[in-house]
Length: 361
Image (tube, rainbow, N blue to C red; front, top):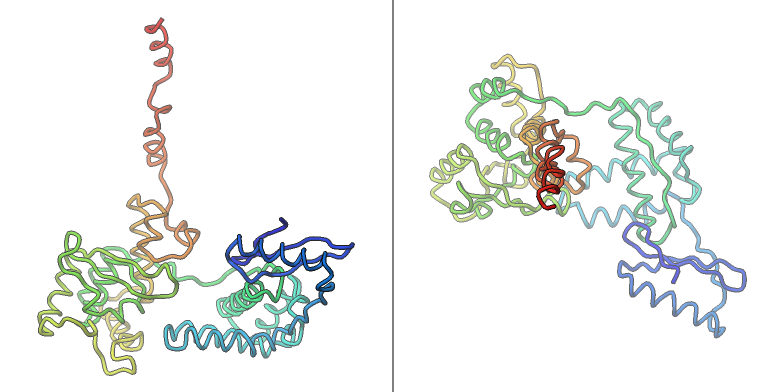
């Protein structure tokens, strides 16, 4: 059976009377895909169907308007507003692109992708914003493959030189920052420093997600986030336990509700709630500026330096792909030697095996 996989979807390909038949089954189940291929072969042999006409491939703009935009809106507008805003920005850029908007999806190749990046640079966008547009293009093209509109998507190459939030906060800087922070910012920051949560995950933390008698000091559940991998359980450190328990007692020991309530649309704090407090704390502590997200990067860097393996780090961080986590894990020479020493063949010293053989003889 000529079944193969594109992303998570199975396709089939075979030749009948000299004509190449290649179609998406729109199935993620291999057995169902094989059945569909077999059925199509049989119908062709019995003359029940003719050679199917090639599908009409839509333009990038029409595919975005008719398929991607409605899907993204229904999926993310309420569940993850930040993700919906990202899709909205990216889709809007693609719809207005002079280079790509009116091209059919199967006409877009690496050269045109590079031209699109140049177009966005000419529009005055910074490297990080251009790469965001390129990520949106890559996502749209991959959705086209997943939905059976395209057989394969072209490689999308990102621009180099993108500014990343690579600032690692030292323990001394952390202490100065927390000392200068107002109570709300202090408590939120402690939770971020000791759990590595994404700021958005921390902002919508609810009391029902906290279990005081789990683990050593309690645990908290992150119920949803950027991806399915974001759902995870994290242990509380002693100082996070203290911070949360103090707030819980002050609130009257509620069984549910937001940990950080605020007069916002969602009923809890958000990025804007702490922006001014963060700037003030940096100024008072006389620290080199960093973004709040750098606290998460700091936690993951420290976790990687502690000897944590990449799989565990990915689980703690809520990463959907370990390639993201690998940048934090750099095994030392001693760690490599210790790992190999646990293998049976590496426990013997040179000549020790010969001595054992002589004793046996």
